[in-house]
Image 1 (cartoon, helix red, strand yellow):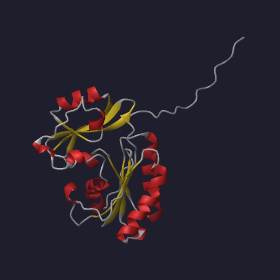
Image 2: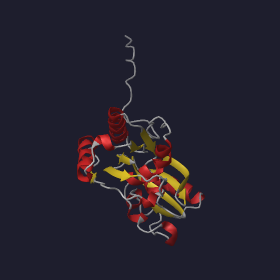
Image 3: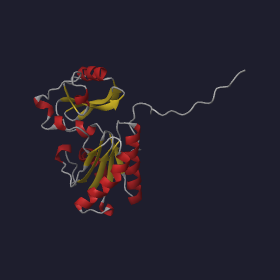
Length: 234
């Protein structure tokens, strides 16, 4: 089963083409046929469609060969999430395919072992975060100030943190990877769409209808609806 997966929840614009076997694979066992990534927070809308095209061309795969589409639902900034989710949904609809959404933080957290936290940049001096126990999410996703996120993760027994938020707030989060954190996970700066595809594999293989593609914003966008004009009194 050929699946195209993508994620735009972080500054990275990431795409992966994966071959899902007949049995649902472990996230770490997925080896994408092609997996381009460009890090540029301001160009998701410009980059995503060409990356999807180039991914298929590199692997010698036609859109008609695909069996499904997977997309990261966030948490992430409003605009970048909209680009990824709308593009994935439109692409899937045009081909008559299902489109399955997965929490983007799981694209890092599912690869960890032990008690591990994943943090990404939420801007406004905040982080998106989630806690994992042997790759299974046990807390979050949520958005908080770094100090509060670290406090909540510690309350869940987490003493190892990975993800791009770690480099932004090194004084707040532990900066040492424990032996049980999983080789190479600390270097995983952005959600891996191949891992998202593996997490969606049980539903894809079973032919289950996907849940609605609801973006995980966790807070209202900066742009607000205008209020009615105030009455002017003389």
